[in-house]
Length: 230
Image 1 (cartoon, helix red, strand yellow):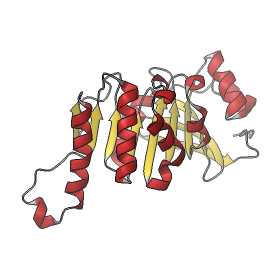
Image 2: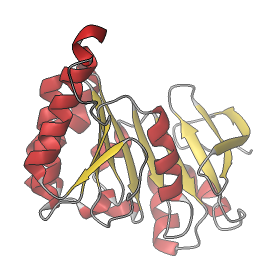
Image 3: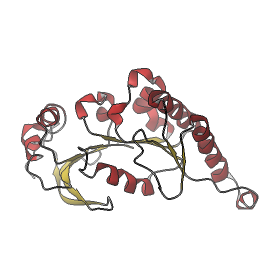
Image 4: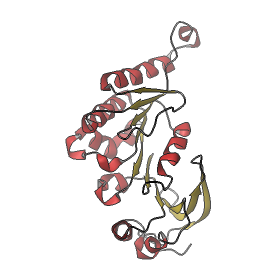
């Protein structure tokens, strides 16, 4: 599963991602370049890449152990939050490990802050990670700066309300068509459009202050650009 969330600062994007952690498949690795994911329940937080990688490995060992074996083991947090000094190095190593472990979820807020060309394992994970059982959840402020392989492989895309002309133009040309992109300007705060490519639907959603998502309307896509009246 590959899910993209687009939204400007304050739109509700980070709250939505934090809430989604409850439903992600562990081990969950969060690459937190802005320090937005402090005090997450059932998480292990570190600025050490090696410690983060070890916690992911330890979780898998703990998860695969029998109930009897766990009596002699320390419980391991299913969520690893890494605040790295080198984001591109961190995402590349974490992507490689999740690929090798064949499962888990990679979560990155501010996904436009990573250079995919400096992280070949991350690039590989984007394109083929689902074949290894690895899921990807991304948040992004500036959609035009996000690698197109991420949106091209997405199962679901959420786009919060925005008035930014460059973002409107991007969404118009690449994802939802001009008519729907223009609607993003007039949606209420904490509302947005979503596209579900698995169900081939487009609709309107809103989030609350806890980051829960509520689908307000949903209709079938008429064409590849999402040109449908909702």
